[in-house]
Structures are given as structure tokens and as C-alpha cells.
Amino acid sequence: MGIHIIKMPDIGEGIAEVELVAWHVKVGDMVAEDQLLADVMTDKATVEIPSSVAGKVLALGGAVGQVMAVGSEVIRIEVDGAGNLKPESAAAPAKPAQVATNSVANAKPAAAGPTPEAAVAAAPATPAPASTSAPAAKAGNGPSSPARNGNGNGSKAPAALVRAPGDKPIASPAVRRQAWDLGVELQFVPGTGTAGRITHEDLQAYVARAAQAQPAGVADQRYAQRLDEQTVPVIGLRRKIAQKMQEAKRRIPHFTYVEEVDMTELEVLRVKLNAQHGKERGRLTVLPFLVRAMVLAVRAHPEVNARYDDEAAVVTRSGAVHLGIATQTEGGLMVPVIRHAETLDLWACAAEIVRLAEAARTNKASRDELTGSTLTLTSLGALGGIVSTPVINHPEVAIVGVNRMVERPMVRNGAVVVRQMMNLSSSFDHRVVDGMNAAEFVQKIRGYLECPATLFVE
Image (cartoon, rainbow, N blue to C red; front, side, top):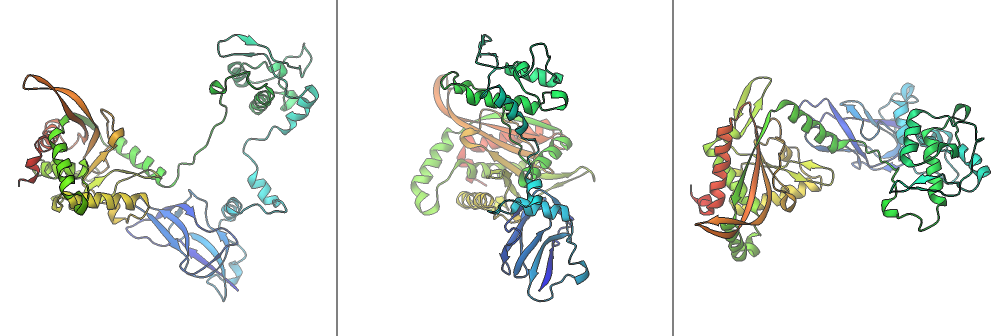
């Protein structure tokens, strides 16, 4: 038997490090050749790491959320034969603390009870207030202190003192403030700190016991105080989104231009096209019409279909329209790209939008499908609201946001009529796109949408 080490592969494109976002195996698992071991994320896509050998998992090289360098150890596998690890180094796995921690985190508890290492790793960050239960038992079964109700009036529940009437409870100002906010008299709270000092944990444990001991129906649970909190690691796609958004807002001086568009005529056309061709060619949403309008508007305003390298002070205007479509997935926001949108008709564009959205939501989009956009379209559909301020997809210089379509009373030819209205909220990089050019670009889009016949005239 030997040990085989699988290292982080060189994914290419000059990438030096990746983030480990998921393990698909744990220590002790038997794996087959080509079996999926882990998922890692680059700045551009999620990449699967398969096993190059068959064997038993001995150690994991990192924890989920850890950033790992290319060439670093991913996993150790016991294999038949010699393996690729020299015997003198086989007894010293890389990064022992990380491997042990991750092994415990991924392993299921044994029936006979956890090992000492597992018990230490599984210990909660906040000590459980076990020692407070003894004084509480002496004082009674879950005593309650005088507490203020929601109207500020005191209501007294059965309570027992845990210290002599003349003894002042010892607590920090922060604990006293929290007790005041909760309506708890510290005289009734047992302390487990030095010299009987009351800690935050003591106070929370006391409140929890008092709530359990409170008779049913005393308080309306709809207005019960919440003391729980949840810590959510920002890893994987969520971390990449955070980094991209922070970079875009830090580097780009945004300005947003909002215009309303009368979509009535386009909606009439869309309904007719779906009725005539929907079954054989697929149903059209508003998005393919918007894509077509943006493609045509770019011809008059190429300055918005560009990428700005602010370090080199160079703007690259693209003849091709590689349109990013902001897509919400279970893991967060992704922007798959319609390549050469200028070459697609309405139905081809609609099919490509559906295909890319599905690939993004199922985490099957390739790096090529998630990179290289020159302009972005974002829409929240029915949740689009009235106005938004979309964040530019750096290093692009413009993004067009679509708000909710609603019926509004409008004045047409001196008469009030009901029209299908929708706002466009578009953001631009003010370093390279002037306000007048941005306004003219949006007005071009508006013109095409309000007179949809012009979408098909070259």
C-alpha cells in the first residue's frame, strides 16, 4: 500500500490561487478513479477536481472557504502500490491542523462517542452555561425576575434571590445594559464568572430558563424577544460577488439615468408573435426585444459597449456585442454572456437566454460563458420596482436595468388612457461616458421599444 497525493492543478489563464468551495468526499471514504472530489472557484468559474486514482481517503488538504495555491496539496489517498509520496514524508501530512479540523467537520459522530480530538473540535465557541444550572436548581425551577412588558408596565413573576438582599450583583456595564433592555433584574441572575460576576452567557441562560418556565398563554409569542443569531460564512460565489461589487463601486464613478418607456405596442406585438409562433419556435419574453434594442442602440453609441482599463488608461470599444445577462442563482448573482448578440434574431436570442440561465442555475456554465461581456442587462422581472441603481460589471462601462412593467394612466392626444409602462434604470462609468451620450443611448433604446417595427429595420 502507498500514499498518493493529489495537488491543486494549474487551471490556466495565469490563476495562482483558488477557493475551495465544496468537498464531495470525507476521510475514510473509498473513491474511484475519475470520481469527483471537490469544487474550487476561480475569479471566473467553478471547477471540479476529480480523482486520478482509486483508493481510501486519508486526509483532506483544506477546509471549505480556504484559499489554496496552485500546486498545494488537495487530498491524500491510500492506494494499492507505491503511490507518489516518498516513505520518509508519508507520516507527516501537510497542514495537519487544517486536515484534522476538516476531517472532524466532515466525519459523522461514531456511535461509541467522539474521540478527544473530535470533542475539542466540536466544542462550541460560546461556553454552555452548565454551571449556572446548579444555583438555579437551588433557587427553584427556572425563577423569573420582575420584567417590563411591551407597554413598559412591570409584571412580576415568581422569582427567588440568588444572593443576599444587601449584596450587589457584579456585572460589566455591557451586561447591565443588556439586562435593562431585556427587563431582567440582575439580583435574580446567578453568575459563573470570577467572584460571582454575571457574564453575557449567564444572562442569556437565565432568560432562556425563565422563558421555558413561563406559563403558556402569558405572552403573545408573535412579539417574543429573539436572542438567536446566525453566523454565515461569506465563501464561494458569495465571496466573489462581494469582491466584484466592492471593486466596481470603489473604482467606478457611477451615475444612473432613469427613463420611462411605453411598452404597450411592443406587448401587443409580443402576444401576437407568441400566438402565431410560440408552439414551434418558443415563447418570447420582453428580454429578447430589449437585447435587440440595445444591439441597435450600440451602433449609434459604441462608447457604451466597451471595457475600460483604468490602470493603462485605455478604453477598448468592441464591435461585437457580448451581452451579459445578470442571472440570480441559488448561490448568488452570475452573469452568463450572450456571444455576438448582434447576430441573433428574437427566437435565437430567447433560446440562448434560457440556455445560459439554466447553465448558470445548475452550475454548469463554462468559464467562456461567464466571461468577456462588453455590456450587461439586468432585470428583476415582477420584482423590478420603480427605480434601481444597478452596479456596473467592471471593467465594463455601462449596465441597463429593467424595472417592473405596470399599467399607468397616461395622457395621449389630450385623453387619459391606460398604457403598459416600464422604467429603464441604467448606470454608466462617468470617466468614459458623458451624461449626454448616456441619455442619448437610453433614448435610442426607448425609441426602438416604443415603435417595435423599427427593431426589424436595418
